[in-house]
Amino acid sequence: MIKRKGILFVLSGPSGVGKGTVKEALLKTMDDICLSVSATTRKPRSNEVHSKDYFFVDLKEFQEMIDNNKLLEWAQVYSNWYGTPRHFVLEHLQKGCDVLLEIDIQGAMQVKNKMPEAIFIFLAPPDLNELARRLCSRGEDSQESIDLRLATCEAEMAHIKYYDYLVVNNDVNEALEKVRSIIQAERCSLNNIIVG
Amino acid sequence: MIKRKGILFVLSGPSGVGKGTVKEALLKTMDDICLSVSATTRKPRSNEVHSKDYFFVDLKEFQEMIDNNKLLEWAQVYSNWYGTPRHFVLEHLQKGCDVLLEIDIQGAMQVKNKMPEAIFIFLAPPDLNELARRLCSRGEDSQESIDLRLATCEAEMAHIKYYDYLVVNNDVNEALEKVRSIIQAERCSLNNIIVG
Image (cartoon, rainbow over all chains, first blue to last red; front, side):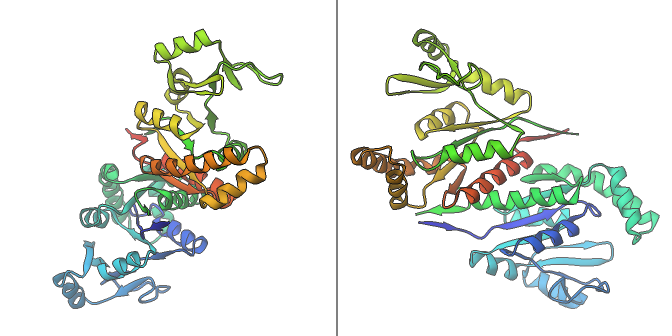
């Protein structure tokens, strides 16, 4: 008799590396993993849906979630706050469902402290020049913002050692296949299986 | 700059579980992993090539390999001896190549003692009834031999805890995909990557 615990997969990496793209592609091809929905105080982009992409809350509501220990992690990024509702994640894991959390590196490090048994995947750019090219071509950021992100990325790469896996995003399909393999492999790992 | 060490994958499991089938299918679909070549005292068959199929040695040479710690594991099967030359495996790992070793559980436990950093994959039958059905339908074994294999299998299942991964062979294509995922994931594992 084999039972399996739900596994929390934390997909993380520097801003602009393609976490969102890999996450979207992953969810399209795997129906047996559910996405953790973050809370944020930032305004929704035009295509974003409340309680699907994010729980969009105001600053007062966010502060109440922090005060009541309802967030697994939270951080200020530029002028906005982001957090992961603890209840959503634990509820799914307890049901034996795997949960995917796409998150920045500061947040991943907080989750690592609170749930070291989660699986941490670092998505890295091929190099900083390529990251700069991607941030520019996205057209959402000023040059100052891009410079800041690049400097941050360089510092963030030092956190790789706290992760379980490193996936270099040379090509989105290759990166997707690697993340899928990591999820599949962890489901076979004796760390996550109870043989009774 | 990212470098990767070669990884030794040990595919193991009870007799009759389908290790050989999974191994053959794996080698057909992955050209970036090489199969460990065993040493044996048995005589070559007409189609077998020295140092490709086996290292064919005489009993004296085999004994010297044991005495000089040149084998990662060895065993007597009927009147012949089989073993895994350490040099072949280490040479490929040092070049950054991954090596696949398909082996029974006793052999895997010997390798575990000598190379605990290898990745151990336990291929298990769906259940003992199914294993009995497969052994019967193979038509190679007497009822006594089948009974012995089933009793052995039951005892061998207790060794799962020494392995890294458990793959239940319900379906050979699913099992193959899981083993491929494990290989792919381990190649992304920070245990096997040097970020410089």
